[in-house]
Image (tube, rainbow, N blue to C red; front, side):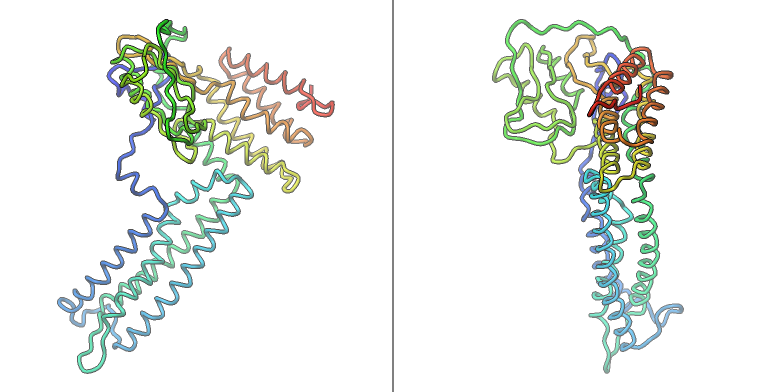
Length: 428
């Protein structure tokens, strides 16, 4: 999320603009899980075609290469091909078990991170490439009156087996560490903090008094999703401000990243526009809708994942309050950072200082509610969780900005007074 002023003077009155990263076609190409393993396999196919030709033209009893006859070469390549097919199936099975474990024990919203792991992708690619390459080379081995043994190619096949062994060790290490609860919650918290800490000090030191803006007493038009539907994954704020400035309108957002929008549901209200104005289509194009929720402009998604882990840990089937306390430690880490900064302003202005976009940004109060309400509810009967929440709120009250300290005190009072069966969620 860019924090620099890339929109020619477009800025938020407090905090960074918050535009999403520009994703190039090259980056989008490599995102799907299957692309990298497929690319490695294609390289293996190409090598299986080229290296035997190199053997035929350039290699003549070179030292340190495979020195067996055609029968031994066939035997070795056949063994490599059959063994690597079996081991690849094993790696794939382990990956599926880990995904199932992560989904059931932590949260199904974590699966995207596991599938994006380059270690897993490279391991599957190298294993698959090993038997593909062995098959490709096997077709060039000839015996009889004019024998041909591609010594370099067989040696490379053996080298791929050694590389597969190394990748297998790396894969096992990666899998065993990636499913440890401490690693999982730390990774989510770090990604969430990266979103909350975006921007430089000058951007966060903007004027805290909300600017005045003109709602335009004339017509207003609601921009909808049209035929699209999905989760709001990105909003290009700079584009919205620039298009609104050109058209002389004000865009009031009716949604924000992380919210679901169905077909025909509202995205924004454009004050000062009329139906059919070109600016309406440009406003609609500034919203990205996808099937999955992402963290880039939505820090609440990171907290949602952590809370999900805590809730599962506190469920009767698992009953692991210590894991819930680990999650609260990471939530404390996130809330501490959010509490020492002002809330991001809702107002984005053009280079002339005129408000052009009215946003619905994440607030500290919203993060605090999301982080604590459900965990306090499901952990009220444990000894560890209420005490840990009390400590968290006490610390936030000491380090937070005055307005956030007041929010923290109000939250503590509500959790203390809230009853479930006559019992407060926190000890008074």
